[in-house]
Length: 511
Image (cartoon, rainbow, N blue to C red; front, side, top):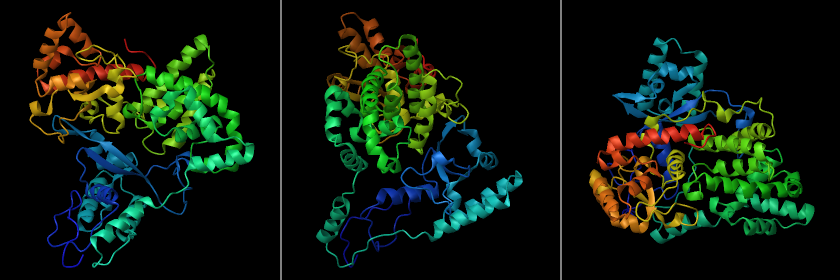
């Protein structure tokens, strides 16, 4: 960058501190390069990244492009880790032999250089002792290591004499000038060409009759996904590019409207009120598609459909079924669930397979992060608590779609009381969170739970029992909270969340 540094240097997280002035700056792609570095060096705390050697099914191919059969492109799986009495869980992830038997190897052995070689040799030694090493596995690992080491990262370079203003102008134009055609725009053109109908007008008609449709993310994308499922196709770009997709669109429009109306009503009844508390994007289009073929007044069959759809919804939220290749997996599950709703119960739905997609254990619930972030498990925990009413601690009002945005994420045990800061992962746990009104949140402040709960009990005209009820409506154990024992309180709440999770994921309404 010449004699004078034009920008403030900040090394990639986890990388060694620079010993001299940097020779170049990364203006764009920082998150991608940081993720690549931390993955290869094993720098993520509480998370192991593994390469899956398990064969992928055709319907698990890349969602945005056709798979290249000549390229070895294994899937990456993320495994959360936690400590239990000095032993990291899950236990199988500590054993390279058992890991390989599951078709998994650690990403870190692909790291270029001496660090990766040391980890590879240690891994090979452990696997050889266990008798699990094979020539095919070693050959594949060597090939992948060579690919990582020799991979050319494309970049745009600027002369060292380039001024600061010019560099920033290039950065802005790189990120704003390109306006690729969206999938929805393609379908608009297809539909108008084939039928003369305006998809924009159809969307406005849908939103006019179902205003909640805009509360769950980009409505245009959701509509395309639901329409694809109703046509019997996976919700992928290649589906939308098919010339027949636009012409078939009107044939599923009435079912789609019916599905949106009843599907979004169902999501709200399950305390998933909008995009801010949505654990999984798949939940919206899968649930709307399933409701599309449930008759308006279905009586007993409607009750059976509701139970099955509830089971599908909460398993979509609590398991990692839709972590990767979500569209093709949702398509596969939709076809089976649709037939089960129609009365064909002799079906196997992979979403319900406990072996491959188990519910998270209590230990994983305990370490789930802050639900204000877009993260599946924390938001599933939040919604599970809100499903029992989510009464405000002070005014006692039940949470609903209309007052959701007047609520704030509240630390049951405030940051100041726990002695951490707002970036402390120990403080920012889903089980340490409740949604309460901003006025109540201001009154609570940095007080111990026993102090602010006792204040609410004194202020409540009906006494302690009312405040207890309000806390229980969030699945917050009253006694454990006011004991001012953070770890014990989270453990007690985890048990309650776990019990409701199990019931919901079985299609039942928790008692």
